[in-house]
Image 1 (tube, rainbow, N blue to C red):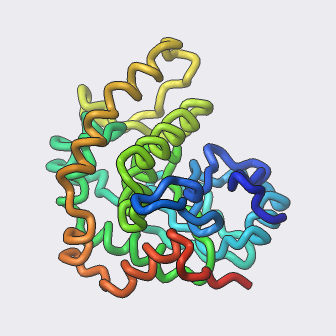
Image 2: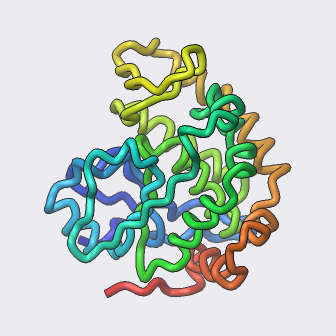
Length: 254
């Protein structure tokens, strides 16, 4: 199954699935489709869904979840899986600083600052993929939003494009109980996330509105290229990844 013109792909069983293609670039044009997709955990994707994903060019899954979240090991035929957590859920300092903001772009800068090696591993896994990549965490919203934003900045997407992608992921995660576990800053413990039925109907819109300024500030103040180079990501890989997302280097698909 080929990607439809708007990049949407009906992979059966996928949750919060979207293509990072079609986002506006600084110098005109839009990001290329079929290079990077993002989603919630793909544990429920059917055999037909994986067949369609591979036909669309998927060759690698980069799983950003922590080991405790990976109850099911998804390894579809013809697709390799790289585990690349972006945090350490047992790190007390991380939880003290980022725990109250794990679902907020306010956590991005300190999260990135604490774990450059982990972030470099995730970015390298995306950039070295021989074909399309599915990037996911549990809900496809927070960790996926953070790493996806790094990728989009490298491609030359501006803050409005980042906001559009982030908000789509945030709304998509709210359509289901995307997170298996959530950190409770009050108790200092991990617990099952509450069902969406318990949420106020206007809570989603208030949450998105509250997060826009933080994402804008992150975009304006965080040097993505400098950070990744200092973290040890090869500059040529970064350039290749940006070019692929811009559509100026063809992806390798079989």
